[in-house]
Image 1: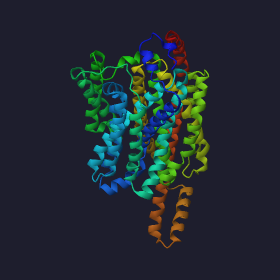
Image 2 (image 1 turned 60 degrees about the horizontal axis):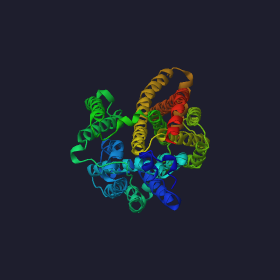
Image 3 (image 1 turned 120 degrees about the vertical axis):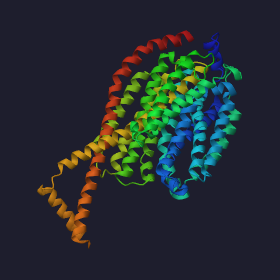
Image 4 (image 1 turned 60 degrees about the vertical axis):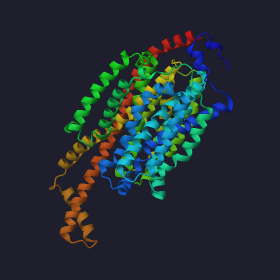
Length: 538
């Protein structure tokens, strides 16, 4: 093992001792990728099965929404604590325990008979899953030498980027043919194999010490759970409960703000904090966390909006909507190693991120142009291929930049921050899009209704044609006239919805376009510091 470049640098020697070679590195990489895929796919796989779950469990629409919300809350609470928990129990033990928890809860979710049981087990599944995501990234990063970390992030990125797109088609197919419990049961054999592989091959770092019971930051853990749990609930349920017209949302907003304030104060002053905020002094990591938030916003926002449009406006099935993303996912998988190679050969991270954002802008403008009340399947193909290229071009440089100058335990802490910000960015993205669409839909509908003049000959002629068509089918004239007016109203509603979707693509694209000059400027300034840090390490 080549330790000479780090000789005499303490923690960096210990960190480099985790570098693996040959078949062992392949096995560890496969184990970590499987675990990341399990976590990410389970984030979206239930989305298309909600209706079946609701009917089977006798739940209301509001209650069944907790199946998604509980998992997300479990995710965001545990992600910032993963580095600390790895230090307490050993990374291998904690990683294996998280897989086991995730697997057991998958069985319990599939075996649930009430909505309360399913919600509790989904929360616990989210706790196990959140740990899988961040720990997998840390394991892969430290298993590769520094000069190959771009490729390491490419391999990890396949799971993170492809997972959300595989979830809906897989969930739709399983639900339609076998029933919703199987979407949880399929995790069990994979989880068992992954747990055994983790116990056999994953190693724990030596650069951390366990805390005594007196040194455990119980207050910090409680404040973190209150802060991010409340924030996640607000983002998931805000639009459904009419935001600040709801007393629950108002109270949770106050709790979240106070929780954030006291959590930051606690972590900055306690001798052994559960989340080491001081790692954010690293300039590259600070930039990486912001970019991870933006990436999550675009990734999960676009993954949410396109299936919603195809199902609600075009009338597609869940499986059809999910399969639409498969070519784009394959494109991302194909592009990941190419981007990793470019980074290894010295391509500048800020230029690749800027290129990725420009490509994502073009993807959004493409979507803005093609959306109609009857857009065909073929119209989406090349647009989504472009999205696949953009996601690959964004993810790897962002994650590589974030962790590039971290060492030892800092890598796990940095991965936790970027992972949490990516998840929160997705939650913010979906919440903002839902609220934005609701407001724009009302605006467009009112505008279209005001443009329709019942005395306009063109409007009267259209209604007359529709009425005659219905009457030809045997409907009496009075009922046919009412049905024609209703069909006109449905057409207006559909047009308003399409205009709202177009607005989402337009504003999302503009947001990414605006970010490009800031990325080039800010990251360009940090590049020199990065080189100095790497030079001092040698």
